[in-house]
Image 1 (cartoon, rainbow, N blue to C red):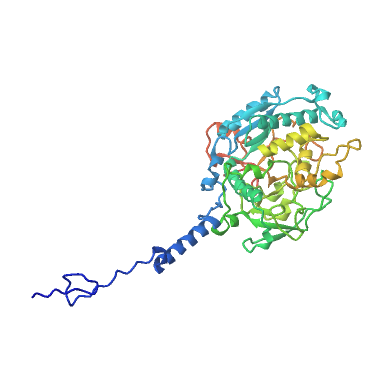
Image 2: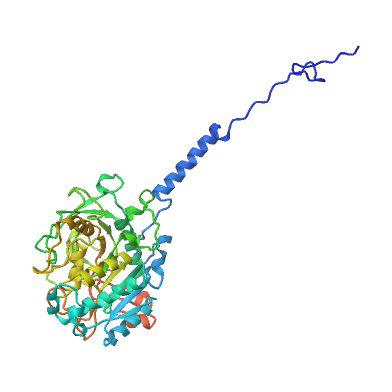
Length: 470
C-alpha cells in the first residue's frame, strides 16, 4: 500500500523535510524606525520654516536698489501700494495742480484730486463743537474741511488704504525704494505685540536722547521724554530667525492694525513711554528702527524743516549721519504734507474731527491724537463721565500712527512763490528748495521731462560743496 505523508496541519503532498510556518505580520509604516525619524525631521523642518520665515529679506545698502521680495512688490504700482492717492487742491490753484500732474506722471503715479474749500465758504452750522472754532483763521478752517473731505471719500468708497497728499508735496526720485523700506518697518511696528526687551532675538541698542522737554513740540500737554532711545536695526528683523509673518493685502501691514502712516511732515518728536507697559519695557510702542548708511538722507547740517527753524532736528545729533529712523508717532508731529490712512483710521479721524470736535490747526490736532491726546474743547465742553474713562483710555492706546525721520515726502517751496500756510517757527518759506530730499522730483522736474538720466540729476543737499550731481 502507498503511504501518503500528512504535515502537522493535515496538508497532503507536503514533503517530509519541509516545515510550514505561519506568515509574520508586518509592522505599520509609522512604527518603522527609519521612517519615524524621517517623519519627525520633516515636521521639524516645516515647523521651523513656518515660525522663523523660510527665506531672508535682504535690505540693500545701495539706496538706488530695490528690496527683492514679493511682499513689497505692490509698492512698485501706480499708487505706491495703496488703493488710491488723493491730492488736496483748491480749484483756483491750477498752478499747483499742473505741477502735481507733471511730477506724478514723471514718477508713474496715478492721482485723484479732491477739491479743497476756503474757510469763508463753510457755514457756521457745519462746524462740530466747540463754538470757538468759528473764530479760527479762514485758512485753518478751510484746511480742516478739505482734509475731512478726503477722509469722507476714503470712508464712502470703502478704501482699505489711501495716501493723501497736499498739492505742494515733493519726493525723492527713489520714492519706491524708500517706501519699500518703510513698508518693512511698518509691518513690524504695527503687527508685533511682543515685549522686545524680554527676548534674546532682538539686539537692542540704547542711544542717548538729545531731545528734552524744553526742545520738544509744545503741542503735547505731557512731554515725558525717554532718557534713552531703544534702537533696533531694521535689517536685523528680516533675517531668517526674525522674519515676521506677512498675511496682508497691503505691503505696509494689516490695515486693521494701524491708523495713520505719517510719512510727510515738517518735524516729529521721538516716541514716548508706552502707558501699556513698564518704563523698562521695550515694545513696538517705543522702539526706534534704524536704517543706517541711507544715502537718501541728507547730512546732519541739512536736517531742518524750514530755513527759519532755530535748531536742527534732534535726529541730526542722536544718530550717525545718513541714518533714517522709523517709529510710532507718540512724540508729536507737525504738517500733513503726506499721510496714509487705513479704513479704520479714516473712520476714527472723521468721527473725531468731523463729528465729535476739533479746536485748532488740523496737523497739530492730528499730532495730539496720534500721541493719545484729544482736542482741547474748552471749559464749556462737558468732560467725559467717569464710567467711560476706561473705554477712553483703551481707545487712546489703540491709536497706531507711524512715522519716518526724515520724512519721505516734504513741502516744496516753488520759485517766486510763498506757501499758503505759515511754517514751523512762524515764518514763510520763500527760497526755491525742498527740505530733506536730495534728488527731489520738483527740483529736477525739467531735467526729468527732458529725458535726462539719473546721473544728470541734481543733489540739492550734497555732503560737501555746492550742488552736486550723481
